[in-house]
Length: 99
Image (cartoon, rainbow, N blue to C red; front, side, top):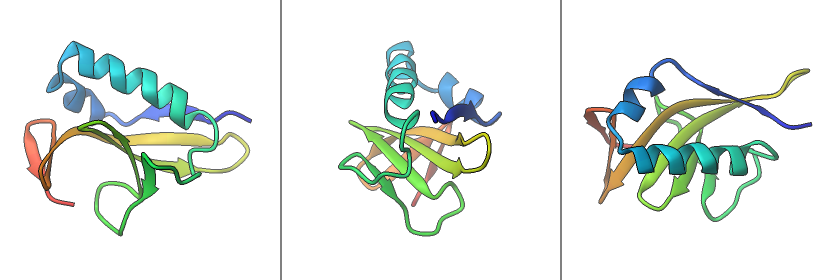
């Protein structure tokens, strides 16, 4: 059964800080990578150490998608944040966070 993709309200502001091309890449890759088996660890998809953002990370080059998985009768992937990684910092929206 495919997972429904749901973006949190905060991600709207995160997307505004990205270029149109980056937005398109994220939307296409999320649909492709997270619709089926989002909890399967791959080279670009991994569980993260405990942090305040999300338990899972999807890497798309320098772009990052942080998400949570809700299993149940209607399984869902909740996108919590999107950003750009520069060295050891991630810029989410207009602020930098350290994970």
